[in-house]
Length: 92
Image (cartoon, rainbow, N blue to C red; front, side, top):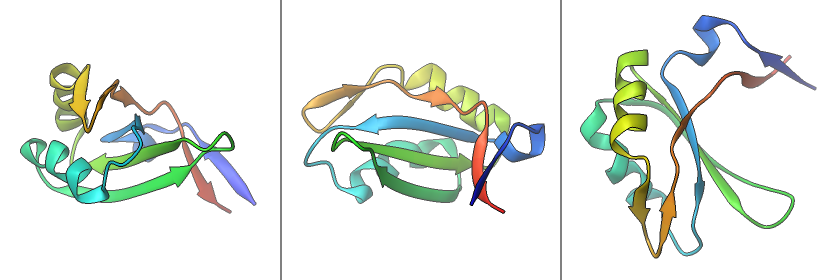
């Protein structure tokens, strides 16, 4: 099962955003690279057929900067809103 972790350590540097159709993962990584090393990166499908990108940057400062400068961001043919994660889902 999954557990939701709200601790400051769990959410440090973490951001997420919806991914428009036909956008490749390397395009998303290129969007995030100016903000420093990408510690973790994944794309998950949602129940309604959408996709959400999750990334962990190296610090809260890096994540805050990404949110500030990429909100909204142009990705493929759509606009995305980059947000800070307030919790993190992880396996038990």
